Image (cartoon, rainbow, N blue to C red):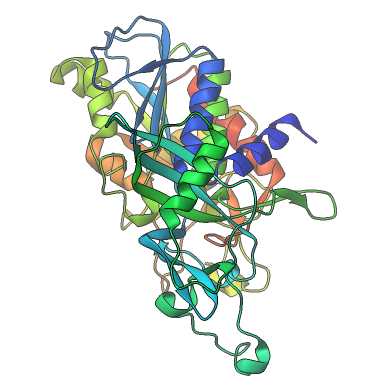
Length: 429
Ligand code: CO
């Protein structure tokens, strides 16, 4: 198997939550010589230099700077670290009918049917108080399935195959264990798991947590020629992976940046989301004054990389004729003149030129006029920061399912074209 694909499969498996994705990307960047900048400290920026910043443990901006004090602009690639999933409610467990049940909230636009009958693990961030009163946090990831949401047998719902209705409140709580008790201490369970990982950890109490369920089935190559990747969170960890690898491999010499935001699936409005001030804050600290920032932004461009809808052979009529992206046929340029995608003719032209100069095929996508259009961090970042933006991504099937499908060749092409963008010599601005 191609190293890059093998590496992606490992990254997907090791990143069940945005916290884990950011931790894994941070580790990669450290390995490639990037230095972490703390937002609460003064930045000592040397040029050229490689740096990264993390916010809320779940969003990350990394940069390779060549001309810090000038107004040369930034070539940026954006993607999101979060994916639709089931998140655990604060008072997590209830005992009923002989089971300990885990209460969950639906995060983002999850396709709910595929969550049934899966071997589910639990992962996320836990905030704890130590015996000295210090507040700290740890990431947790059960390395085995601990939960299950069973389907109702067909015998008990004969109409299940005709039109199954999922009541989020009643049908999604997950089975954790059999019990004859009427109480369960979830925080005690979390303590047990954390101290198993880290026996010396001093936990006086669990203060809070952000945990979610994930599929324990490993990512895999499928198809007669191993041409597809099947995994959870391809939207959009696939793009995060390609962006990170492209940044590390790029040689410049221009200012290059990746912007990986949490909370895209719920509208991006948070301190770490694309509608928040994270990128703007980093750019203004790099550019030092508004005059330089203004000139820099006019010389900048963002590629917003997020997956696109490949045409589904069983539902081909859901796509606009002549705009039916195929898997393994190159990155898809996403266009919506109502600004659900930020692509305009100028940013599209630039992206096409980068593809052509790197011998990468590309495709176009526009939504049918009678169907609503999705969106990305592209228009949000463009609005917030004022940077010209193109929305692109690999074509995938089953978007927002717990198991999605993308093309092996597309992943390679995406990383290639993003690197080509970072290294493109004949930039017009
Ligand atoms: Co997405």
